[in-house]
Length: 247
Ligand SMILES: N[C@@H](CCC(=O)NCCCC(=O)O)C(=O)O
Image 1 (tube, rainbow, N blue to C red):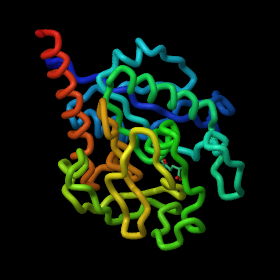
Image 2 (tube, rainbow, N blue to C red; image 1 turned 180 degrees about the vertical axis):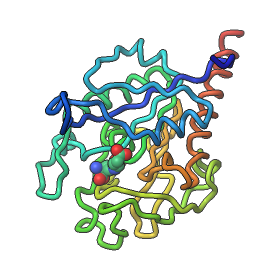
Image 3 (tube, helix red, strand yellow; image 1 turned 90 degrees about the horizontal axis):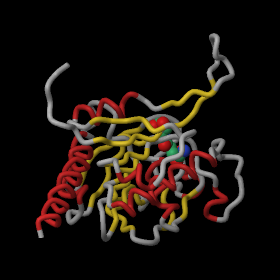
């Protein structure tokens, strides 16, 4: 086993899917694409998959160095006071509640958070915001990104962690049919598409929170800098905690 220093421990959330074949057909499986694990490993981190069937205490979340909220199905619109629509993907309220609790515990503990696609939407709703339910109807000027992974251009605030990581304009891979309608709480919009649709948020104060509507974990899409930015936030936290303990 290679001798190495302790890599930052980053929790990676997951969804569930029913096994379709084999001895365990009909049983639930924990699912996360390997892209997230590979992207974190290549950034020098130690990814640990967090099963949505589990329950983590605030103390256990505080043991993490970072948290990545991953992509997946639509959120339950009841969370922001709306009803079901025919365009909705089947929500997973248990996963919604679990990831929202993880996010809140991470924020309380000062653990840096990166939200990707659905993960960004979990952050927006947890902070009191709301989502467009079906972009082809709600923002017709926005490219159709719900049918297949699609390359789109995004304009990024220079004075933001994402701006430092990616510059003020980037081409990214998007795969979503819902999007940010309103942000609230401690979030600020730091990136938009030319259609006007917000595509990324960051926390205005406190520990690092970055949420992107696109998929930086997909290899060859230029997303590495987003994961390096998470690792930088983790290092900054370690240094500030070490400095605080010396005072
Ligand atoms: N359902 C929401 C979020 C879309 C999303 O997270 N897509 C990625 C799915 C693949 C993965 O698991 O990463 C929407 O459509 O807006």
